[in-house]
Amino acid sequence: MLRKLKGAALGAALAVMAGAPAVAAEKVVICALTFVSSAPLFIAADKGYYAAEGLDAELKFFRAAQPVAVGIASGDCDFGVTGFTAGFFNLAAKGALKVIGAQSREEPGFDFVGFIASNQAYEAGLKSIKDLPGHSMGMTQVGSTMHYMAGLLRDKYGWADDAVALKPLQSVPNMIAAIKGGQVDAVALPAHIVAKLVGDGNARLIGWVHEHTPWQLGGLFTSTRNVTERRPMVEAFVRAYRKAAKDYHDAFNALDGSGKRSFGPAAEALLPILETYTKASPDAIYKGSPFIDPDGRLKVDQLLGQVAWMKKEGLVEADLEPMSFIDLSFIDGHYGVPGN
Image 1 (cartoon, rainbow, N blue to C red):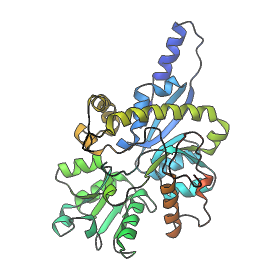
Image 2 (cartoon, rainbow, N blue to C red):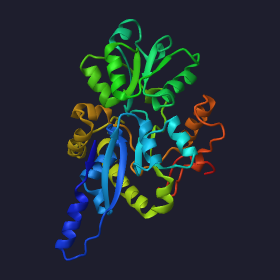
Image 3 (cartoon, one colour):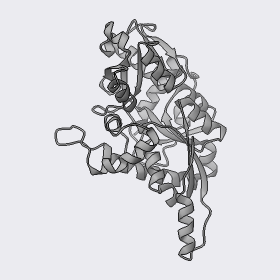
Image 4 (cartoon, rainbow, N blue to C red):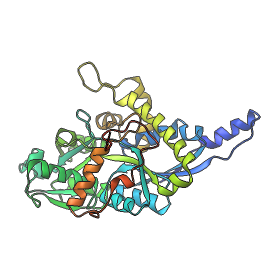
């Protein structure tokens, strides 16, 4: 789906009416998945933050994370926001991509990605994440975020390499169909999808990623060419993105005095935007809104840990140097930066 934003055209019209010369907005294409974790992209579009920065933005949506990275590398997209995958790292190692900020991350207390079991597997004994050995688990692709999450569990609990049979299904819709039909015993999916499947009686929740292995799941990235040849445009985009991330943070990251999540008028005001893009219900959005850093700051050490795991598994080149494709110059205050 390609959605052209009208804010830039409106801004230009107002400028003409005010007697100022109209300046053509700079075209950018943004690639993402329709998950709540992409919320800053949607908020920036709806509130006109891109247009205010002189950007004529289009959003292009995919069904898995890997095509987003390919879209940036090929030049079809200017910015991507999604989870880090082996495919992403391999493309980045060729010099095509630059990580410039954070998307969402797994934080304790924030239900983001949940593990669900098929009804059949649950009734047969798959009641918790620790029951996964001996069962099958669906994922999008080898080297995907789902693959890494399964690997983190394996390493934490000392399971054998083949304890859980991983089944690449290529896309999130295929994963949903497989868990509903019992073709796989378990999958890991964003919480707003988990809420829908469990609420409809099509699957059973067996645990959350943040309860076991919190990590930096995704990031904001662009092409190396944009960084070197269109830096003012990248800076403008980052400003719009961070402004929207702050809106999201104020609405959905709030905690009450007891440390529990608290949603008020600010969250209610953003719900229509998130509903439009994710097609999720308000209840599912509330249940599945992840932690998003208000300034787009990365947990760099966790990203480096993911690359190290991918190397160990033979999913990326052994000589890959992750700091070669991480550009921390657009946002201050990143966490876990080597040498700091």
